[in-house]
Length: 384
Image 1 (cartoon, rainbow, N blue to C red):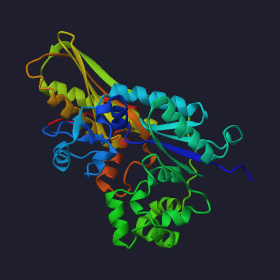
Image 2 (cartoon, rainbow, N blue to C red):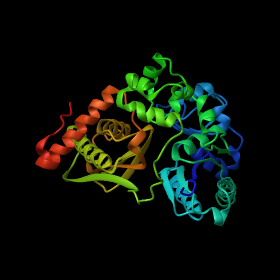
Image 3 (spheres, rainbow, N blue to C red):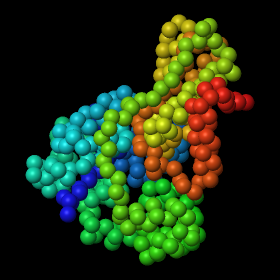
């Protein structure tokens, strides 16, 4: 038998808000929301645990957050600072093992199977990591310890904030049995309703059902659901260097304020980026718009999405929202660029029974293939 595998999932607690509370003593122990002001259209990127007591959560409209927590503090995000902090956190993790897979700005998987003699058992190592992050960066992390990635990710969520949870081969089915099916990767709103309509509300309900019976409900997706509900996940921690960003930009021959031309250019960028994301099997959480005006003034605007995507329409819509918010008016634009960052592995990001997204995904892949064969101009998307 091979050596028993141990995976850690490190998840920083309320990352953006915790950084601001660390750097600004006046924000500590107070409800803090990172995002648009409560009198503006926009969403909350993240919030402190003090704000969560009022019912505020990430991706909530800022106006709603303002009504729930009228005495809260609202500040805009400082993405550059948070990205730099993320790099420092990853350096701490890599000081314990080289087997680190960063999956977002504030999350990573670690394979610690082969460093036990150096650092002790995986729970002891998790404690060391939490202590080191707190010592070097002044922040708290929650860590899940388990035999595979799915269980480690679940474990890191169970005792937030500042948690440390162990799931073993021996207790995994018992722990999973009480958790809702929405905790299974790939189960979105559509799939959840489909399962709940058939009487499946918890992972325990799936555990008690044969794979054959589950196939009658889910078809080929049944095996995926059945394996995860029983705590089985064979995926490895992947350490290959992934792109830090994927971007596309265009400099116009003549500076322009032609709205139709600018929107067509944004769409071309979105399609190019989405194609690269699909090729790399990545989804993005953050959209970045870059504008350079005729006087060479250059601005960048960012939007972090509540759910990661590799769909050009969603990328385009968010980019257009950023562009429209700038109120460029008659100002002429020399360069327009679009970028994406903050990537996650796309394998489990979509809802397998969301037929609209599924059809659009199949169409996008087909278009990718045609353009690869016939050139980028073979098919062009119309912008109304």
